[in-house]
Length: 332
Ligand SMILES: NC(=O)c1ccc[n+]([C@@H]2O[C@H](COP(=O)([O-])OP(=O)(O)OC[C@H]3O[C@@H](n4cnc5c(N)ncnc54)[C@H](O)[C@@H]3O)[C@@H](O)[C@H]2O)c1
Image (cartoon, rainbow, N blue to C red; front, top):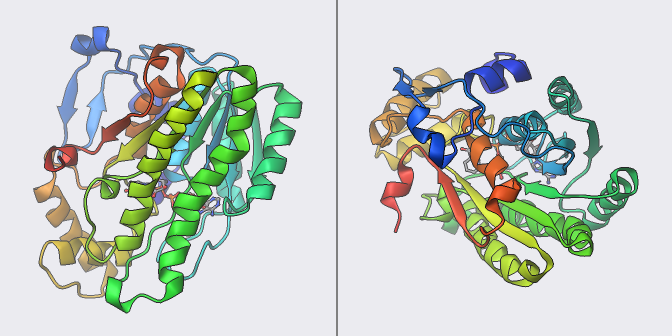
């Protein structure tokens, strides 16, 4: 994806990566690992336009997982509203900020899949801004069917060296921001007695994270939020579930601070040289990955989200779905 500098069209993503594995058809799917451990899948779209006419809201849509899922939702027939801050979230994170141009590029990819596209540049810490967006979307489309509450940020700081802000940026953006998205969009789903909410947590919300306690706590918190929301919203025909990504190849993971963290976990000392540390992190991550994948392509997240957004998942709520390249095998 764009994180390694390559520009991909939606069709390229779809033809190379996006296939939806229904249980009945799993036997027809061929998997072949390459040296990177990335999987090349059968080019079969097993679900077709399963989300035809649905309106899906995706937060963190400018790039990474949000973009890949936005394109997949459109490929499955949905119209997509992309939300992103498109600016520096907080200088304490080593993650490069997303841009308005990237959000627009996601829009072009969605449109090339036949989906209508609208976008809002806002900060998900701002609940009133989310509520205004929700009102506008509902007024224009007449319904809001799917929320992929995905936007997030990551930073590392040892617990005892933290300043208050180190803690708050991650709890505020990841946990409170995700709750804000739910609070802004779920009322429209309740009103129509139908809705699908999928939140992005993390494998770091299933185990501890060295020097990443605020991130880990925010992602564990999202699972608690999801399970509680599933209890409250189920009677209104709204399901709530979590996507649990492993280590994904996006700007969130491809920078020096993250390479250094991976090396520290492996008992190594980072050099501070980005290229050297990236290569060392690649080796360390690949050797510890069950499926031999250092970073998973973000498009691999899409099949689970499309399934959870569909009618086929009507009896699935309160659940976590892991796409971790096997890292889940380490979790209870
Ligand atoms: N990349 C991974 O390995 C990984 C693993 C597990 C979970 N996740 C989670 O997946 C989600 C997407 O991450 P990604 O890897 O695609 O990262 P990314 O940095 O590529 O994309 C995140 C997007 O969210 C947006 N965003 C951040 N804060 C925002 C805010 N306050 N309001 C609105 N938009 C905001 C950013 O601008 C960016 O476009 C995040 O919640 C992240 O924690 C990522």
